[in-house]
Image 1 (cartoon, helix red, strand yellow):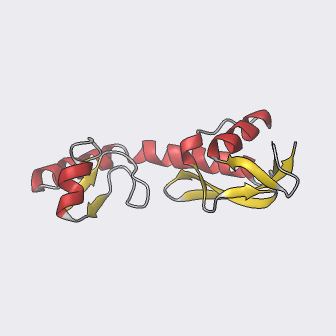
Image 2 (image 1 turned 90 degrees about the vertical axis):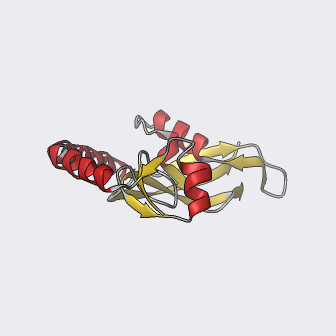
Length: 147
């Protein structure tokens, strides 16, 4: 089943991408949630025309994302967490804490574009990925220390 995404879907695609998914995933989740529409010939023509008209806007958005990525280069964050005597964190560090630490550093980033691959449950150095645009992503190192 081919669908046109109406918004970014993690591990599937970005807005206005034409993707192929299994029938159940499309009919039972993506379409009812408003995340996608069927890729009929008329919908594909409308999409092509909209993309053509928005091409210059998309270039500006990409340039803005690259500017934010340049400001994130070289930034290293330190996040404090309550820990036990063995160095294990009570709870875990998530993208919310990384976004708050970035805001304290003077950079405002939406927490939804910050991804941490492994669970952060101990003191140490980790890496988060900030996906600012479908073609622009930045590796953001951060360190978790005991409070």
